[in-house]
Length: 400
Image (cartoon, rainbow, N blue to C red; front, top):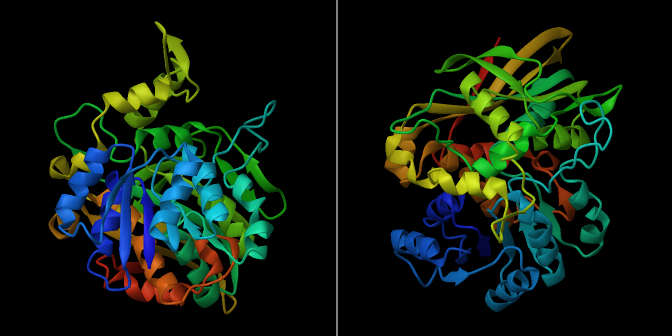
């Protein structure tokens, strides 16, 4: 398989590092706006012929298309902030190659009732073009990271193998990771974190469909394996938009353990307008406030040696099996020290990266195949889950 990797930040680096040992990967083009960053990752990999470096501007669709054609790639792997998703998604379609991302095209709140009604939902742009992709025989796998991604695979596994009827599927994410030396240092892209945490969260209910609520709503305490109880709150996330398309459940939610201090900082950024992605004029220079915040914070890819603890991503499901109530949590637990030792990448980005890499193998071997715009739950979960331990990210199931 030949891959054009668009974006060589923390997750992009982890994707490249994890792909390197596998013979199914023939070529992976490391493309980034910061060419020096791509060259740094190339040097770490030590295989410049198999991992060539290219400059890319993800806002320039023609440049993406030209690079895909230059290297005759089979897949464009989108590993940049989702503001560029439409461009990269359309470039793959125009060139006639498959596509994968880890976060779907962006939402827009309802203009008059944002905390009750959906406006433009995550992925609406992509699913509106699903028939075009299907007619062209191309495959776009959207939302294939860890959350969304692996968590969606777990949901499909629960439906197919663990339950007769599902009452609720709740994605639950929490960690006890500490970053030394910083008052405030998110361990993932602050651009994406602001987007998903400050937008109105979406909830699915079978009798209502999709609807929204206020950010950080419905707090509850969830007991994470090997981590302990953490308060989690509603956050806008792709799983809620993906799972109901393929899995029958009465309710679907996503809740994240952000911590009260983190939530307060996000609220302050919003109050000051520093979360805005639209550019403003500052003394003759046009700049997006959110980009300024991102530039002031440390690069998450370089925080690994200051991080300690574990992060847990998983899918909590309750329903019925053989006429009896059943409740499980299917999860993947990543330890930062182990991820740094194995991959030289911190736990949060490493945990996000392994799902796309396994998916690339399944596509390369023809095990997962199809056409159109599909989420992870559209595929047989067994081949994916069988490979998780071999890739260094085993799953576990907690029964209640």
